[in-house]
Each structure stands twice: as C-alpha cells, then as structure tokens.
Image (cartoon, rainbow over all chains, first blue to last red; front, side, top):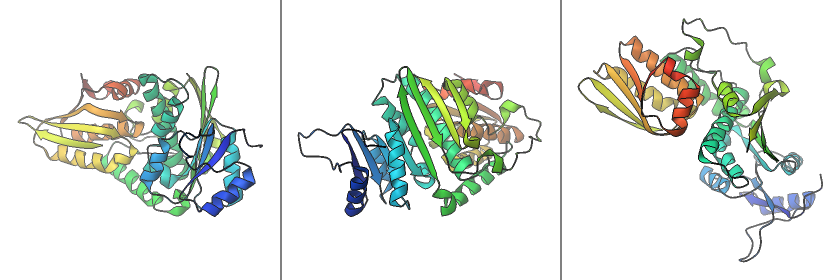
Length: 248
Length: 101
C-alpha cells in the first residue's frame, strides 16, 4: 500500500538505525516531535520497542494513528502491521503481556474521542464493549484460560492461577491482540483480533452442573454486554476476531 | 480496585474504589475472606466510588454473594453510580443480589 500523504513514523525505545531503515522501506519520514512551531503530520504511526509500561501508557495519551509494539517481530512483519494501520483510522497491535498491563479499551476510546464527540454515557458504554472484547481476546483467546466455572472461591482461585501462569509463559504472553478502528458516516467499526486457536480448538465447556440459573453464572456475560451496547457484532475467523459496529 | 471495610454491630460495609475487572481477582479473594470472617450477618458492598466494572467483576461479586450465602450471611450491593449502575441493570443482577440505592 502506498503511504498516505503527510504520514510519518515515530519510535519509542527502538534503535534509531532500525527506525531509519523501516522509514526508508515504507517511504515515510521519521517524526520525532518537531521543532517549535513545526506542524505535526496528520498521521503518525508509533513503533514501540522495549519501554517501561508507564512510558507506553503515556504515549497512548498522545494522538498517534497507531501504536505498534515491535517485540520480537522482524522488519517485514512490522511493515505488514504498518500496512494494516494505514487501512484503519486508529490501530493498535500489542503483545498480550503489554495489553494485559494497561487499560487498552480506555485508551482506544480516548483515541476515538479525539476524532468524534463522545458524550460521557456513550464513552463509558463503548469502553465496556471494547474492554469485554479485548479481555476475551487476551484471556480466552491468547492465554486460553477458561472463565470462572461455578460460584465458588475455588473457581476464582483456579481462574487466577491459570491467568498468572499463562501470562508468565512467553509462548502465550507474546501472542498479539490487535485493535482496528474505522470511522464511517454515522459510526465506527471496531475489530479486535487475537492469535489464539479459535473456537474449534478449544475444549467444549461442559454444561453447568450447579442448580443456579443462567443469569447467576460467574462467567459468560461479556458477549451479552457487547450485544446490549453495540449496534451489531459478528464473530469471525472461527472466533479469533470480533467486529462491532457503533453509532456515533 | 481498592477497598476498605468498616465493621459495625450487625453489619460490615466494604467500600470499593476505582475499577473492578478480571485483573482484580486477588483483591476480591481477600475481600470475600474478610467478609466471611466478620461477625455481622449483613454484608454491604458500597459501590458509590466504583467507577467501572466488567463482566468478570460481576462474576466475582456473584461468587462473593454465593460464598456469603453459604455462610448464612446476607449480601447487599449499595449506591452504584453511572457505568456500574448501568452494567448491574443490563446484567439483571437485581434478580440475584439485593441492590439498594
């Protein structure tokens, strides 16, 4: 894809020579904040190397068009992500480890609010829908941790132990979660994608054996909340991708 | 999420602050333990200063209710505001847990 006019790359914790090389390959200049009075490019794609969580979190408060964590990706994989970012209005690709440590949904809704007016209630509702989708991608998709089964402290303990163990395992924690947001005339389409094994590979969950009603289960409420907030949603790629539409 | 618990004669009041999400399992675990050990029959969780709750947070509150019911204690959610109030309503939690304004 040809780079858009007035787009640039920025770096955080990335070796300058690598940033320069990527900049030349994709044909976008490097933007490093600019001199006083200099106008920022319309769209700046941030490439993030190793950096403290609070430094990454700080960058999410700035108006980039994309936040791309480089992690162990080679140049061609990073370029592929930049291509994806160019097809969206707002884009993020983070490892599960990084995504789990910051409030990604709140950050993404903050980015949406820099493009479109979002009344407080709408903002909170969208944040919940994105948060549920991102949590599904992180917890059930990438980390392959089952929800809390049953209404007991032991179900909570099992969930906590699985979550902690998988987050500490690079084979799971380095999988990516991707957020792609595109604005349309009257709304926005938000896609959240994980790198898990999808529905087919997951163990079929057994029906609840407790006598509690459906509404009293400890897990499985996320999609219900998304359905109540979004105009519509679709599960794609065997459950690895959710596409939600919101009126704005 | 953070919380503080105030103990009275017949009830304990736990005040939650901040955001209650799937990442707060250890805090919820500790809170359930504290409420189980308190003498009061009535355990109130005050949500006035809770800003955000997700579906896993709802699940953890249901686990708290169940564990306390098994210990013959009453569990009440109180003073939910804004986003938290709307989520409790959408999840129809009032059918399962006593919710007070």
